[in-house]
Length: 98
Picture 1 (tube, rainbow, N blue to C red):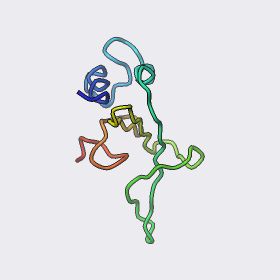
Picture 2 (tube, rainbow, N blue to C red):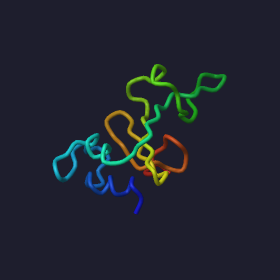
Picture 3 (cartoon, rainbow, N blue to C red):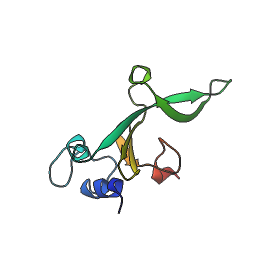
Picture 4 (cartoon, one colour):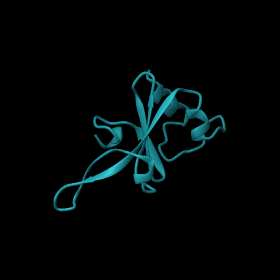
């Protein structure tokens, strides 16, 4: 089981829950692990249409854009808006949308 899967299980496998089954906050649970945080910015094509998200600096981040939490085992959780999921096949994607 990956670290991301362990955290998901602690959160009741509910991507809209930000309080773990034991009453701890989502961020408190994340702090139990070494985590690399990346902010996802929108990548636009020449026509201004959103493409996949890519890592940006914190100053380029807009509220609601995805935040990627990568753990030592290279698994990741992606938070966007009021929800989160284990990372999908592409960086900053959700597994549930693969």
